Length: 81
Image (cartoon, rainbow, N blue to C red; front, side):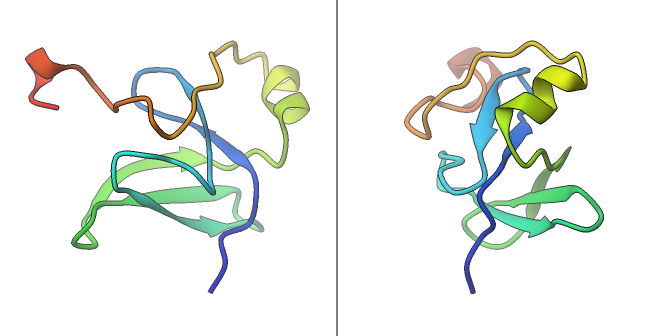
């Protein structure tokens, strides 16, 4: 099963790719519902987000966030991450 290419906003307000969300997480995407479920390594739901097909859709929604690579950690050390 492949993950559709697109983007979502993580809990820190960063823009992440559905195909490289980082942190050992994987994305489950429902394109029709515009939904992204981010699952932990053991399958637990860690975060839910809106699916955006491209960066222009995020801009059109009025969202400003930094596009980060999957190597960027989720959260901070002081938050337990």
